Length: 251
Ligand code: 13P
Image (cartoon, rainbow, N blue to C red; front, side):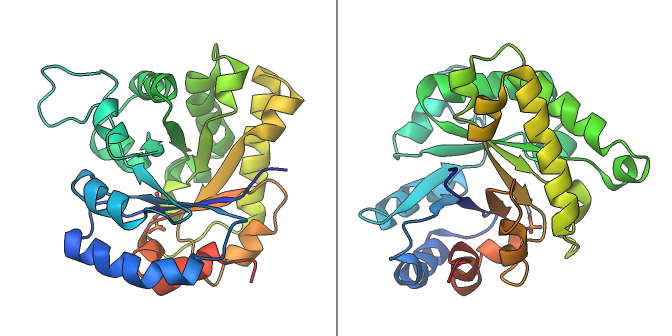
């Protein structure tokens, strides 16, 4: 059985005060939830505050990016060891905003995933198609390219540690969610791809999230799908009440 994993992606939002206020309200709302892995992927400037704030809770800390080198002349970048210093457990890699706005390639994303695995960080690898690609019927081809770029040639034990987030770009921040059936169909396809690259057992072990306008109102239906193992949540993760409702989807 795959344990559900619900992660907040705060993107470029919140100051330290905002993060403290969030935690004060959020923690009591999820204190009894042991059935779901809860992750907060915060801006680098909040790693320290959130790391302190979640001590003793079941909430895990995540970052939103990292550079695939230990140290060096990489102005403005963050090394994996700098994330580990704050007890960071997860790192989002290859978010569509990084791919589209900052020109990150599949090759670069593969390097980052490998580095994260090497140092013991769990990558949350994002994949997904643009609206144009969906309308042209290229959804599966796009996901295949992005998945194969990272997983082909990888050790299957390492592959199982990766969390995949299927995030159709047209559903991000638009209020338009992929229907739970469409999300399930593409996620089932991604699982089939993994079975082809590795085997059924490996494919069944990998957790695959859906992301794109996830809200308290649609989480139950998404989580009822057999292949959807969680969610990566942007806008609705910024408010403690709405993110708690999403995390507590079983109640
Ligand atoms: P929204 O939930 O705001 O659509 O963002 C999704 C996302 O990009 C999470 O990584």
